[in-house]
Image 1 (cartoon, one colour):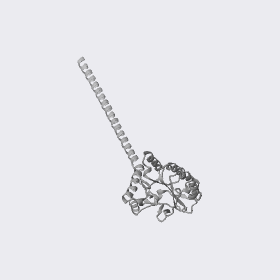
Image 2 (tube, helix red, strand yellow; image 1 turned 90 degrees about the vertical axis):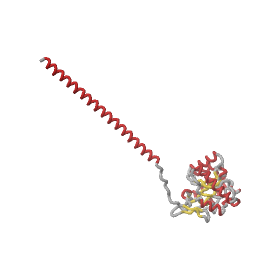
Image 3 (tube, one colour; image 1 turned 90 degrees about the horizontal axis):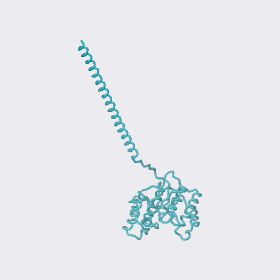
Image 4 (cartoon, one colour; image 1 turned 60 degrees about the horizontal axis):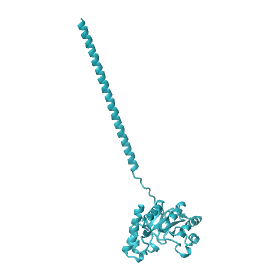
Length: 279
């Protein structure tokens, strides 16, 4: 009897131990499964974050579409005035500064910028020989002004061969584009002296040929700020669309604020060169 009871007890103990081992195995298995699920979910979350970041980067790097608008003005080759297209304002003038960037171009650009007056700065290559001069041109461009081609050496094109004319025009285009990232849109020949070859080359380069309506600051009688201001504002040649020629000169830089104020007092607005029709 004792032996039989002992055997029953031992059997019961073995069964309990087996159940305990089974429970522990189940528990370990469940813990492993949970850990695996957590790890899987973690990896999935990391992957999702990577996908989101990639999409965000793609959105940030996507180039913006340039907004283009219809031209508002065009150059009249008969008198080089600026003519309105459709409903653009008629009582306007165009400000241009030649021989930049010599000694006063930065000062003149700052004056115009402070008064929110747009302009074209026509540049020469011999004023872009040094890093400092190139930086000045970049500053003028970064202020929002249009940069025009005034040839490399400021030579009279009518005295040059066709090969020399080509070099004078194309070389400065190259220099300006290297500095600003943009090729000049407008061309003005020194002394307003063009040739059939230069006209065709400018057209082939898809630039706008331009001279001027009036200017005085190279004449001896107007190499004074007061006299220059008076003539620029009150000349008989001031009319709608007038193409105003000025230069990088100390008397012109001094006269510029008064010229702008005088034109505004007469009710003239100022054409943004970026709104002028191209080729």
